View (cartoon, rainbow, N blue to C red):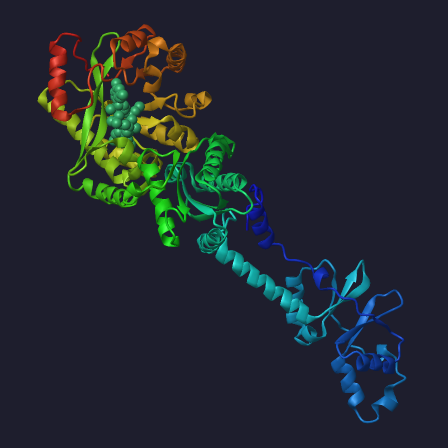
Length: 601
Ligand code: C2E
Ligand code: MG
Ligand code: MG
């Protein structure tokens, strides 16, 4: 039931593993010793044994080497001696003459389930009489059919219990057992005047990891998380998996909130350590929310709702933290739910739009491209930042339709600017890992190109490092297919993900975008400057151009220019602008004579 090489770290997991051990036990545990009779023994003596021992169902008949050769059962012997004059006629006969010479004989290591099958096939008579057990070909005892049946039914019942109460993947208690334990825990807390802490735990962006790295990767990750959580709690506590990446912890016998905080801090620290999964090391974070019994709620439902609300508050505030419930959090979940629903409608209601941020060539300062950045203007909430809604779009799969809309809209804007008389600029569009993983992603791009929406040399797709690296095999092929269409490819936020340089060599890329965290205060941060220089040198060696993202001031511009970065993008030149505003900005930028108009992509 548990994966063979899954880590089993806690007594809870261990117990579950023992309970659910898939191996059938052997008949050894059914063995009981019944003195056999030898072949030459007289029938009358055997009859006496049955008369004296009312419990005796059958005896084995063995030869002088203690090899079983037959069986005499109560039915057989009583049938013989009930006949008229049989006692007088048969009492001197040897048992070998009346025995059943075809008993069921099994080795002591035979599996109980296999033996049951043999008995069923051989006839139910054997179920009553039982069977003979050998060890190293020598008689060691017998087992009754009754014991066999009892063993099988007990195991079935236990399996059913395990199936009903434990999560199949991680071996942790499931929702049913969690509910039981929580009820029990609250009762104990009340009796002992202690506190109980209920913790809701959700991995950050798990769906995204699952979608981009595959389900077996996701399963391994969950196993690792289960093991780390189990190792972080005390024996009396419970960690359960409610489904997906949702875990809960029940912390019992707490004296104060501080006790629980120690445990949560331990969990956060444990999770922070890189997780080796399929020869990769990944780092994940989680959002945790906690509520206390009886302080926050005296009912089970209320306590669950409050711990859940605290966890959603963490998600809303940007994840990767834990929070203890307070009354202001009560409607957190409702808000998130509605954000998800409203995002679904946003596309149809025309609430989504694109802004464009110029990309500028160095040292000429020619405008050579723009990056299309998605905007959501919510009728009540106003501008919702991409960092809030893009993860939701990815988790819900909405990013597929939104991403297609972004591509079409960016192409439409591109044509519209050309009609207006702007030079043809490169149009960079961000592609989510979820989109990229879609089988027909290439087909979509191909369709856009074939429909004449854009000349492919002006379309650039931005992918993050992690997306490309984690789907390396798939990625190389897809990137080649895209390249064959003539579109350009860039790695976004370079330096923040899995920088596998050897892989980078394999990918048909055009550009590396250096993450803005390295550009920030570059002049006063020697480490950042060194990294930026290294990335530019790496780009040079691979024949890739480099773009510095997030250049906000002339110091940063000067520094990246001096290191021969090819292009820059950032607030220093312009914030992302709506399509119409961009063309106005473009004209002004050119007429201010700071650069020469560029169509040189
Ligand atoms: P990104 O692709 O790395 O985009 C650059 C982000 O940096 C943008 O944030 C941009 O507004 C911001 N930025 C540009 N210059 C500066 C600067 O000088 N200083 C600072 N502090 N920030 C600057 P934005 O628009 O909030 O987008 C955030 C992220 O959301 C993007 O990062 C991208 O990963 C994602 N995103 C945006 N639009 C799309 C889209 O259409 N599809 C997908 N899949 N993701 C998108
Ligand atoms: Mg980008
Ligand atoms: Mg970026």
